Structure formats: structure tokens, C-alpha cells
Length: 383
Image 1 (cartoon, rainbow, N blue to C red):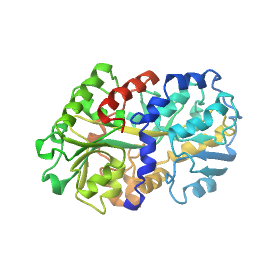
Image 2: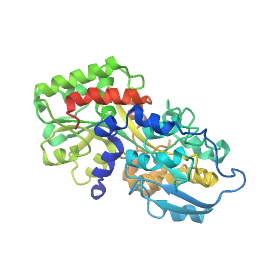
Image 3: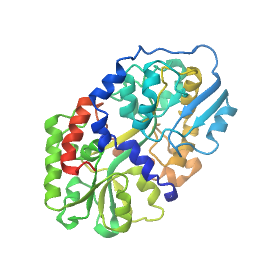
Image 4: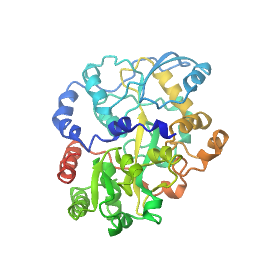
């Protein structure tokens, strides 16, 4: 659905490390708000059936029509749903003081991006799930269930994810793009864009150089930056971007761009020449997670919501709306019931061979985030 390309929203979700925010929210920022943190605990009764009111804070246009009503009809829970989570950093700046004082923030379940969830966990501001309350967690993709940041998913439940790879205009390239070496082909000099976000921009470069984003080092990050610096100096890289790379692809100024799978899935119906590929050496992903703040007023209802989301038939409705990559395994049959085109779209329902080439970044310490952002900014100019 190209009309729903949300450039400003997606940029704000994924650019923490690429822009000035990474320099502002440094170690001193988290240290200051962490000084008043308290041990994680549940603030409501967890026994008995879930009921009452569930307050959810989520990103705009991240919910399928009729989904909330169906959940309410299937339960004794009333949902107060707000699309008020517009930016990880802005949200954190708003809630850090009340959370540090263990005061209600007006939400029982929120959907931050993975790095923000990790920060909240480090501050002891998230509750663990009641294991028996989310039996459908077994439907999670194995690679997400065994995540480094939360093995077994004790406190974070993936909501949506997407791939970071290469998008290209097949009519302009005249051939398929399959490797990182294709990105540097002299034929495309001045027609390439890279993402200015540290993790999204450098992840596939690290993988192509034999390094691992799941175990990054200063040396491996520097080696990736050195390669990019060389390509920038010789005029190969046209610009560094956020989600505005789509403008260059559409106009033809950019032939190959580092890109997000969901953007291209939405653009392809209007421009079938646009293609997306995870390079043979690998790409990375991003994940938005459902978490329960330790100030929740209704943990049982939040867990019932997560369990409902993780029913494959229910989740297929969300996937059909967002066109992001499902976090659940074996979704083909349920997607096929809604739209066979979705089930066969490798950007929405990627084959296992593609998923196997995706590597998640390690949860970075705050000092690493600041260091890597500073290093990459010397090339990107802080874009």
C-alpha cells in the first residue's frame, strides 16, 4: 500500500544511533535517570482471568482495522488504545521521571524498538511476563525467541520486524543485485545511498567483511567505516539518508540504496522495477517489542493481549495491514487466507534461506552507542 509509506515515522524509529540524538542521550543521561530506579515488580494481581481496562501505547498506523474490537469481543477486557508513541527518545524523555519514581505513565503495554526496551530493562523498569499467561509465545520464530538481548523472551515480545538490505531499480541496473560488491560496481558511481543510522548502515558492511554485528568491536566498526570513507571520497556514494532514500529511488537519482524491506514492499505495486535483496553475505533487522512497564495497572490484560496477538490467524491480519515481516513462524497458510499475494511476497513472508542471512546486532552498551555514532558521523557528517 504505497499511500501508507510513513517516512517521518519510520525514520524516528530507527535513527537513534545515526543522528544528533545519539550524541545527546549519552551515558550521563541514563546515569542520571537510573539513579532513582527501583527493582522490577508487578503492581497488579496476576492471578485469575484477565479483565478491566488495558491501556496500550503504540506507533501510528501500526494496528489493523477491527483488531481491537475483535480482541474485546473475545475477552472481558476493554482496550484504551493510543497511537502516541511517535519517537523512542521523545517518549523516553516524557516517561523517565515518573518511571524513576514508580508512578503510573498511563500505559500498561508499550511498543518501543529493541534498543529502547534494552535500556528500560537495564533500569529495572520492565516486568517479566507470567510464563503460563502467554502460551502462544511458542509460535515465535526461533531466531527471535532465542534473541541475545532477551533469551526465551522473558520480558520483551516482538511485535513487528523488518529486514535491512539493498533496494535497487532493476530497469536502471540492467541486472540483479545480489552482493555487497555489486553496491561498489563502478557502473553505479554517484548513484548509491547508504543509511546514516549506525547499525542499519554498517551492519551489512561488517558482515561482508567477515565481522559479526552480534559481537562488534571498535576495530571491526572502524574497518567498515574506512571502506565507506573510501567510497565516499571517490564519489561513489551520492548521499547518506534516513528513510528519504525512497525519494532518490523513485526519482532515479539513486540506483542502489540501503533500504528497509517494508518500504519497498509498499512501493512495489506502483513501481515493480524496484527490488529488494538481502546480500549474500547477510543483512540485519530491526524489531519493535511489546513490553510491560513495571508501573502497569493491569499486567494480566497486557499478557492476554500479547497472547492474542501471537495467534497466527490474528497476527495475519496485522501483517496484511503493516506489510512488515511476521515475527511468528509458519505464517504462509494464514496469510494465504487473507491475500495469496502477501503469502508469496518474499518481503512480507521471506523464505527461510533469507531469514538465515539476517543477523541481529548485539545489545550495545550506551558508551558503545555513543562511540560508534561519533565514529560514523565523521563520514556521514552527522546526517
